Image (tube, rainbow, N blue to C red; front, side, top):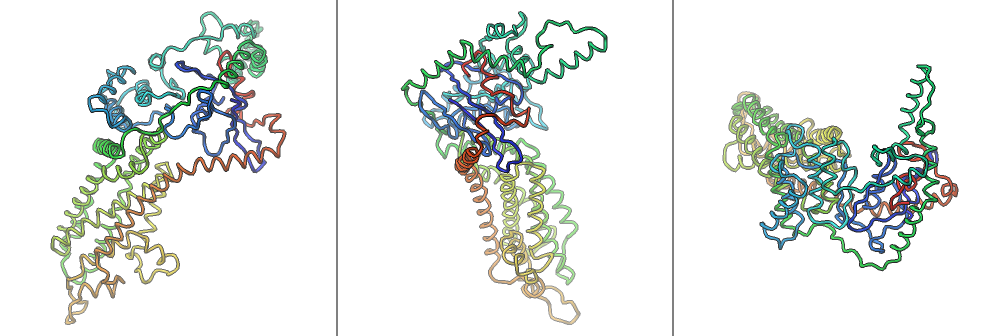
Length: 620
């Protein structure tokens, strides 16, 4: 009721944008209501307002009532189908719906009951023919756009929500696909003929009333009309068309429709109905917020789904595994059988630095695939599929086998070709050091993805951060020689590469002896070399260094979890503070309440959305 959404401007050099103004309306149970209007008229803004998904920099005033009672719609409170169909392209239609069902349906349902619900949903949305076809992505050909849209709807109706919002469900689809989507949602009744005829813009007998409405209120047609008139003048033919659209600009048509609607019986009926509904003491609507599945079931399901996606997505890990094998062979052959001569000292140091630094750096290659997975997470999180902690843990568990494989392959090839210090314990430490270093890099890129959700900017940002950490690892400049302020304390201490490289030095050098620099001198011990020449103390042990790397890994994962949680929790608080500041700002500008300030034709209609889109509908 009286819904208003504004985009304030506190600097004062630009007018405050009015996205929605004084919009009132109602929707009755068991019915489908379509919101119509040209691009930029505020349809998506209205849906976001009703679903509680407005951006943090806009402010909404007014009341939203369910059964006559105020209700705040939280995460997962309603089902919402966005314009973008965000799904994992490596899964089939049936798998996608099945995983979604296990993530959200109650635990007391048996596997057979869940499968029955999945099959019923597939039948209901007409997805039988493509049920076992992969959805598709950049390298996999999959289902059509219309089938993707129906799949998006199927995922949201799976739990039989009480409220379902769909943002342009037929946008970008051909006629047949759009027909199937709308047919799946029920046929929408056609109306509006009488009002348009009385207003002086009768709907032609063979024209869709919906198209006729958009023709009336879409200002883009002014350009078409002007072009047609120009063509007529060039042909020296008088414009004798009886079409009112050829004689009146869209702004004048909309103004006429607005005034006619305000005085029409439809506006009066809508106002009376809203008054009746607002007085009803209905039962409070119990909206299930979030999933009904247990935390453990969600973790198992999400881990399995993520693992399947990683197995089928060639760009996630398989391409990296191949590259790691090739690079490991190159490293092993370049540094083959270094031996114990004095020239082998620098070679061993360089090889260890390359493996713990540059080879782990290659882990950023999976960032684009992780960004796509993050998009799915954001959509499912907003719809209440599962929590942030479940996602964080499932990502680690699902990637664990691949990271172990990379570490074992890289470690085995390089360890035995280079012939580092022999012994199983040294081999085990070498592989563990690689494993945790790669996992730290992946965790760091997860943090970057949560802050920079663009894979190009993310790779640049992540590469820059990793480069800074590698620079303070102790290879390019010895740790004791680093400038004490900032670089030595604290950067080198929070750099995983610093601890990983120290552990690698200790693992390889301690216990070995090398030929002296000059003949006749005593042999150089490994302890002396790393302490005197590379500034690495023998104590604490290499296992302490590895434990610090593990601690950094845990901290990175926790920071990733914390960022997602804070962004989620802080959003309502931020909006509340922002709204108060906005209202205080607008109170100082009385003109704002009288005359709307409009600066963008795309984002701001000439008249309020209720005037444009409420013709012969329950909106006014």
